[in-house]
Length: 79
Length: 146
Image 1: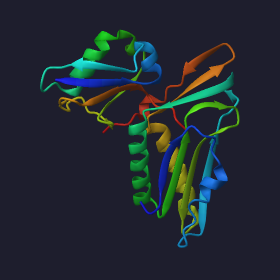
Image 2: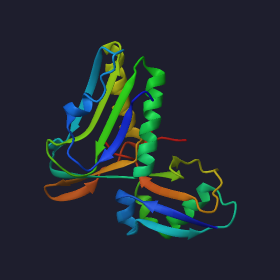
Image 3: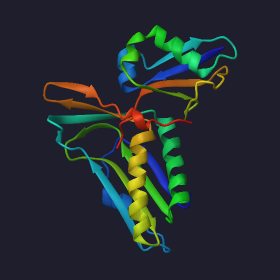
Image 4: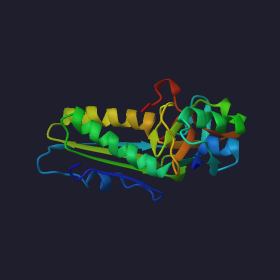
């Protein structure tokens, strides 16, 4: 199944990407998907990271489905 | 949501105009936070900031915060506007206005809203300072979870 992964701010700088497409096995869990991404872009580990699936903060055991929108970003700093 | 609003914009913010968008007849006061760019943070002198957002999720999180604030505090209407892009020293980055029948709840809700916005809404600031630039990372000990 294919998902989109979005990067912002520091994670966009570390990966050099704003958006990538990822091919995942069916029934992949969010935690495993994010681990795959971190393995592909190890510089991300320099930061404390937050994860979202379909614009909601994600638990690692959430199952990903085809077409989902994932996002990886650093602790927020708005305001 | 009772006429509450939550917006992202790249335009300069008019704090007074934003506050005056919510003057419900049932309320007696609006408390407004004008958050603006400071020049000095610790020992660093800021030249300017750039704000970026995960816009779709930021709007959803702002909407959730307003719902939570209305459930927790005796308030009526909330307006939140956050600016994105490049901001100079002194420019307003965020306005939070809360209207309530009585001012105490408005003050408390406004304080709660800015604290929660800074913890959960996916917006990031990059600081350009004398000698470098860095994305500011929030305090991960208070990180949000679903």
